Structures are given as C-alpha cells and as structure tokens.
Length: 583
Image (tube, rainbow, N blue to C red; front, side):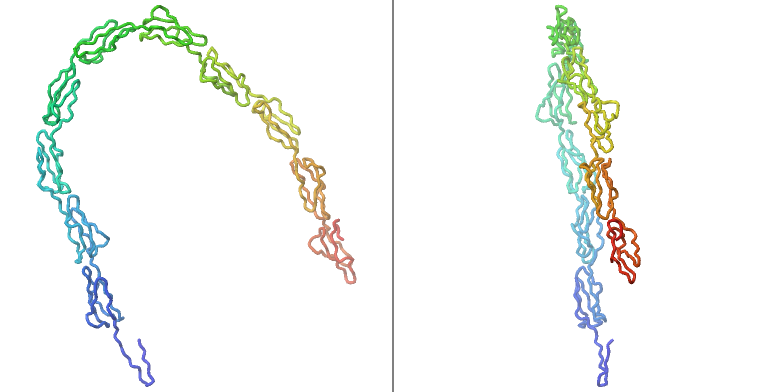
C-alpha cells in the first residue's frame, strides 16, 4: 500500500495507479512465443508455438498481476511402448521413446525385416515394420534322380524328398528351404562298392580303375585252393558279389615208429598241421607235418636222445656209471670238502640233457643277532669262509673281534659283555651311594656332601670306558662382606668360606645388633645392623624446664633449657650424647 503526504500548501499529494508491465517475452526451448497485441501489460496474452514433434503445455500465456509472464513450455511427443511384431522383435536403441528415438527391428531366422529401424514420428506414433518369411522358389534339378515337394509351399522350413536312380545314392534323403532363402544342396552319387573284398587263401583284382556300380574284378586263389567264381561284380546294393577259395584235403594222417601224429585242428586240408610226438627219450625229425598243396602229408621219424659228454662241475667231479650217454644213462656226483652236492646222481633226461648238478658252497645264512651289539659282513657273501666283524654297543666289550662261516654251515659264536666300573670312588667332605645293586655301565650313584659343602654333580654314572664320573664337594663361599649402614665389617681371617667370621663396628652414637657375623652353611653371611643410640626422656631441671627442639630423642637431638625468673641456665641447649645420655 502506498502513502500520501499532506503538503505545505495544505493539499494532499496527487495519487496515481500505474498498470504492471511484464516486459519482453522469454524465449522457449523447441518453440516460440508471439504477442497477441502490442501490449505487454497486466492481462496481455501471447500464443505459444512448438517445433515439429513438440506440443505446448498451454497454447496461451498471460501477463500476471505480479508483472511476470506465465511460463511457456514445449513438451516433446512420446510414442510410448514399442509395437509388437510377428516373427520378430523390436529393441530400443536408447532408453527414450520420445520423438526422434529409434529402435532396431530383428526377425526370427528365415524372415526378413521390412525396415532395419523404426522411428518415433512427430505424430507420436512409431513407424510400421513387419517380418516376411523367406521363399526358396522352384526346386533345383538333380542329375541321376529327382525331387518332390513334401507340401505346397517353398518358403523357409519347407522340405522336399530326394529320389535317385537304381545304383545311385542320394547325398541327403530330404532337402530343406534354408533361412538364407536357398534350398539345401543334394546330389545322386553312383554306388561305390569300395575296397575289393578280401578273400581267404586268394586275391581279387579290378578289371578297370573304378569300383562303382557295374564294375568287375577277377578272382585268383592261392596254390592248393580253387575259386568258387571267376569274376565278381559291383551290385546296385553297393556290395561286391561273394567269392571264395576252396582248400585241398590230404585225408588220413600217416603212422610213425616210436611215436604218434596228432592233428592240430579238426581239418586235414591244405595247410593243416599235425604235431609229431615221440616216446620219452626220442626226438622227432620234425616237430610238425603239414598238408601240402599236392594233397599229401610231410614225412616224419623219431630218433633216441643222446646227452653226450658229461657236464663239468665246479668244486666237484662226475663219473659215468656205464659206457653209454643215451637216455636213461646215469653218472655219480662227487664234491669237495665244504660243499654240498645238489644231487648224488645225474641222469640223461628225455630232453637230451643231463640232470643239472652243482657243488654248492655251504651258506651260513643270516648273521646271528647279538645282544647289546651287532655283526656286519666283511663282504657281500655269507658262505663258507666268509667273515663278519663284531661291534658292541657303547659300554660293552666283544668276546671276539670277528666271526667266520664254518664248514658245518654255522657261524662262530660271539657275545657282548657289559663294562663294570667296580667299587665307588671315595670323596672328600662327602660320600657316594649306589642307586641300585649294580656297578655296570649306565649304573648311577648319588653324591652327598657335608653341611656347608656343595657337590660338583648330583649323580655320577658308570661310563662306557668302565670308569665312574668324577665328583667333588666344594666348601660354600659367602663372598664379599655385606655393607652395613652407619658402620662397617672386618674379616677375622683371610677366608670368606663356611664358618669364617667378621667383626661388626658401628659409628659413634650407634650400637651393633651383633658383635660378629658368620658365613652360614647356606652360603650367606649372618645379618647385622647399627642402631642409633636413644637418650630417652628429657631430664628434669630444678627451677626451670627442658623442651625438645624436634620430635626425636636419639643421638644428636637437642633440647632448649629455660629457667624460672631470677635464674640463669648453665647452658642454653642440651644434646643427646654418643653415650646415650643427655648433657
């Protein structure tokens, strides 16, 4: 509210109301504002226009009574949710769905998009898009065969059956319209019988360079075999004709002196074999006979075995028991002292070899165990004459240094005897007492010392050397005299060991607690102290009085002397003397 002043003239100031003016219009993003008249004062209006793809929040703005224009605003159009698309999908290229925003169109396999991208239009609607199925069109032609549609369509996923002429194979049974819009590839391939069949006891050789339908091959058989057919042919089935070679037959086995012949199988045909067996002690001229290509069996015979010259034997000898060395002949084995024969007699075996024999050196075997010690071989053998060193544990002596493997096959005897330290040693100023009844290695004894002495060790032990440990009793030493306040100490001799004494002296005005201290059995000196003299109660004084100058009455303390009127003190102050009496 405005105020009017009464002027000197006696009249009121003149009052005036001025209309509010909102001034120039503000610019607006994505649009413009234009005045509806030339005025910009209160109540004037302006029209809001927006760019393509935008709409005004309000079409008119007014100059308000506050002198400020209403706010003008252009709001961008929003297309909202993406449209759905059959056989495909749409994905936003950003997070916005407003005017100008785009989305990528994707189609399922086998479909093409009508457009790659759709856009939010100025109208506030998305572009239209669709997915169209691929079409492979007319079926492809195929050599040596034909194709037939499995339905009336040629679009993606449609199929057609492949048929081939006799003697040909389709590469696939069915072709399919692919997502690329093209049919699968297919072909009719002539049947190939492939590698010629193997034929037992014969062979097959191609009559040309091909193995396909209609090709032929010649059959040949090994010696002793006949072919079932002269030629085979590659059939429309893709397989070769069958063929075989038939073997010749030698019939019944021949008989053999001093032996027999036994078939190795159930057949007597070409290549069949039979094992020649001879009676014990005989050798066959051949181990096996065979049915020949001529249809006859091999010849065979049995010959008696001969073991020949007697074998030599180490550490012994052999002697024939007869003049023959053939199967069944024998020889006696002799052996040297300290050796054992493996057998007493050897015989010419059916194998044509003499029995094995050997003179084996006696073996004492595993070394004997020894209590409190061990035995170690002096070599790698435990046979007759071998030796071993005897070692005893610490504190033990061996009965022998070495043992030997005897001709009997047994090791010498050995033992380890424990060391004995014997009688306990004597010890000055003390004694030693066994901890058990033995004085052998490892036994112990307890060392005891007289009062005032310390043992060098608490226990002595019987050593591996057979001697007792050393021990001694050492007198206790109290060491340096202790210090004493307000006094001193003086040794009564040159020693500070157990039993030694020292005299205690105190300063003037002090009394010793003891006159002498002694080195105890514990290795410590007696305790001693110097106590200050105390003069006690102040003396009374006629015609006067005495008053302490402090709270103490000990040596050196003082007291003031006061006399009654008309009297003089002999001294102004009295003192507690070293004698323990007041002045």
